[in-house]
Length: 416
Ligand SMILES: [Zn+2]
Image 1 (spheres, rainbow, N blue to C red):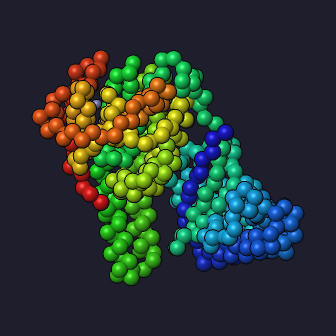
Image 2: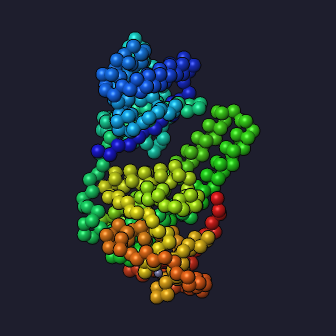
Image 3: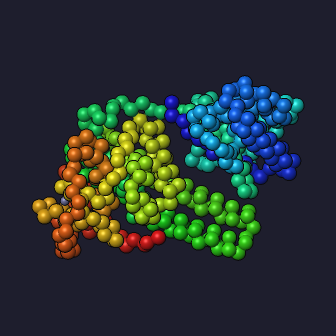
């Protein structure tokens, strides 16, 4: 069953409630360290250690589950300081009323003698449906994590939800492979392969996200240099993160709607683990969105695709931006984002780089696509720009769906 994490920020608690949260948090860490340092590797060994702790049973139970796994499963040899406080799902008690300022409230568990208290939650509007499903019992809660940020508290609730089962496999007949290239000069460039021909590309503009990220960087740096109060920094950080989250939600929705407009769609994206292994990782990543936004965008596309019953496949990302989608030879991308094929016998000379990447991604999911020749770039001097007119893609779609380089242009890229 797919899982997902509901995220909420606790509305600023009163001093009394804050103290209670802090007590649980500090005691949890004390218990975690004591049990870990003692080498407790079974539930009962952890139980012996945490029994005297004045912690809610939901927290103790989470420790009993978690600590034995630390060495065995996660191979941990030491503990970080920033562990969230974990609670088992019996701490997932929420209430909803639209009459309140914050509609959702969480019942914070207290040690045996209680009494428990309620804290209002700020939830993301995008997750409102899942919160409603959780309260209605349509999805079941898993572990909870209480996270202390510098000035605020966050609550993460894992939930298991049922996804629409796709009515077809990703390798069945008649599927449409849709390559998504994420985070180059466009936030998302999508391209469907219809009978092998690139069709009707999707472009989600990335300039707003890029602008926000830069502005965030400068603003936070300036605030830090000025020794601004931490709450001010946090507030600005939240502001930018929320703005980026909105962009991510909108773009992922667009990508899935685009996929749904084709027959038996299969989404194809790059597997990031390959990127990490690649030598020019740093350089490549710098051209892309900041890592979290990038990974998050992929996650959200996958969530939404699965909820819509669309299969998702990942491919090896090596050379997707430098390979010619037409002849399979390695060419190069110029600083303007255009792809150049240097193979003499290929009719592609210059092509919009992101679309070329998206087509390569879609092609590669097909096992035959893996056999594309990976030839090193030839020493031929690149042909000059006069060839721009030869990049029209064959498509059976109407005139308006045909793509030319001119239509998408080579956007100027700002180096960062
Ligand atoms: Zn070529």
